[in-house]
Image (tube, rainbow, N blue to C red; front, side, top):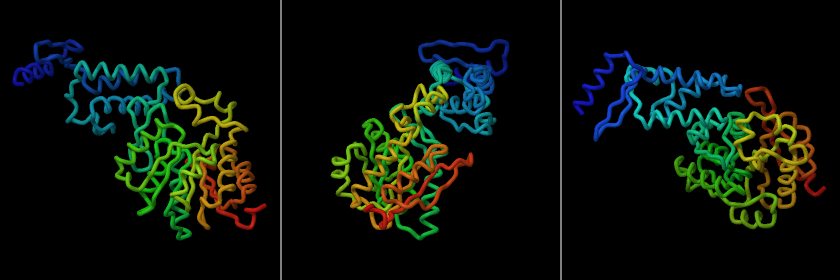
Length: 340
């Protein structure tokens, strides 16, 4: 260790070469006089030159995220470039790993898949190619549900999430609703592995159950849900992108995220219709004052309201996302129209 410190001190005071490599039976380390700041500039330049506008415009943040992920330090500029880290040296393994991640990013792989997680609401959620990446727009649903609870003094003791993915929506809601129990449905077994992992890390494992099922198979799903009914709240962020819209998506989404979680027939409306029919045909799944809350795509509100009203539900409210797009619709049971 003393010898290694002598070597490091020598290099700090001798900056004539970009890097000096030392080998011994116990040491295989690349010590860069460039330091973290130099590595950051190198990576930022590569990402900035990407033909993908999303990568190019986010190059500074993404460079920090990738470096901090490999070095296991905070990604904020204040921490990353602090005095504490100014003499942080990268091993061969760290530098190679970093270059691998940068090259994968330049192939448009989402950064959340590269590092294996995404922050949503108040927590970090594991994600991979089996699931959609949690997005800030979806936090609109969590916000709206908390608004409804507080405004109308509602109790959501049992929550059903149709198409749970990473579990980010359901688990974030359960975290905010003390004592509530949730059931998450997904047809992807791989997604449910992640959802269970996220529930365990958030210490919510005892308050949630994830089921491998599909709302398009009503009979088997209703049977599985029987032991948990009735639900006071149903949430869903179903596939809602039309085939034409899908063609226009950024390559970071289109080439990597699961198409089954993105695309829906009938101009993006098919799954809303199927969920509406599921709830209409199986009213026993819902409590008397149950609410249904959907995430929706841009401009879909009128069509979805029409679908849900035809299934016996009353539209009560909506909420816009940070881009001022209506992103969330709220429905309640309309008993007068249920049998029509």
